[in-house]
Amino acid sequence: MNLKIDLQEGKKESVLYLDGEVDVYTAPNLKESLYPLAEESGKKVIVDLKNVNYIDSTGLGIFIGALKATDKSNSKLVIRGVDARVKRLFEITGLNEVMDIVSDQREEV
Amino acid sequence: MVQTSDFIEMKMPAKPEYVGVVRLTVSGVANRLGYTYDDIEDIKIAVAEACTNVVNHAYEDGEKDAFMRVTCGVYDNRLELMVADKGGDTDVDAFKNGKGPIKKDQPIEELKEGGLGLFLIETLMDKVEISGDSGVVIVMTKFLQRDGVGHNDSGISTEAPKQ
Image 1 (cartoon, chains in turn brown, purple):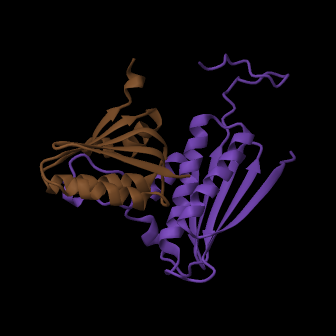
Image 2: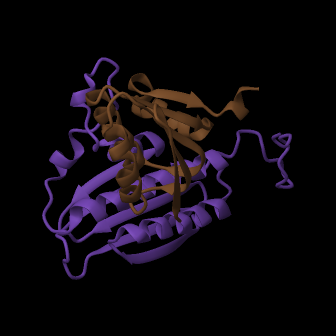
C-alpha cells in the first residue's frame, strides 16, 4: 500500500511516473511532487498512471488541484496510461470533460 | 426461507494508513463471496471513500479514541458494509449535499478538490444509507449478480470463461 513517484524533468515537459496506490495515505506525497510542477509556467506536466492499480476521490482531488494550478500558470496537465478501470472513474466523476486524459496504449490495439 | 449471514467487524484507528488495510480486508471478503473483478474494485473504492471521510472529517487532530468501525454483513445475495465513527454530532443533511460530478462547462478555477467521495459511493454501490447520531454511519450494499443463467444445478457455471 505504497506509492512510488519518479520524476523525469525536462525543459518543456515533465513526466511524473506513479507506481502503486493513490489514496488518503499516499496522496500527500503525490501532492508534494505534483503541485510545484503544476505551478511552473508554460510547461507540460504529464502524470503517468500506467502502474497505478488503485485510485479514489482523494487522488482525483489532487488532479483537480493540479489542473487548477496549471490553468493559472499557463501550463498543461495530461493524465496518461489510464486503464479501463481508472478511465471509468474519470467518466463517472465527469473529470474526463475538463481534463486531458490519454488511455493506456496497450488497450488501444 | 433461512437466510445465512456472517459478520466481520473491524475497529481501526482513524488514520490514513489504515484505510488501505480496511480496503484489502473487504476486498478479500468480497472475493470470497464471488464478486466479479469490477464489482470488487467498486466495493474497494466505496469502503475506502467512507473511511477517508472518517479520517478527514470525523475527529479533531490528536483526538483520543479516534476510531472507525467497519462491519461487513455477508449474505447470500449481497454484501452490506457499514462504516461508522464516533466523531460527535454531525449535520448529516449538510454532509449529503454538495456532492456530485463535475460539469463540463464549469470554469476550472471553480472546481472543487473535494466532494467526490460520497458521490462515488452512491454511484458504485447499489444502496446507500447515511445516518448520524454520535457520528456518521454509512451503510452500503452491493448485490451479488449471479450472472442470470450462469449457474446450473451442479453449481458449475455454464458461462464460457472470460478471455
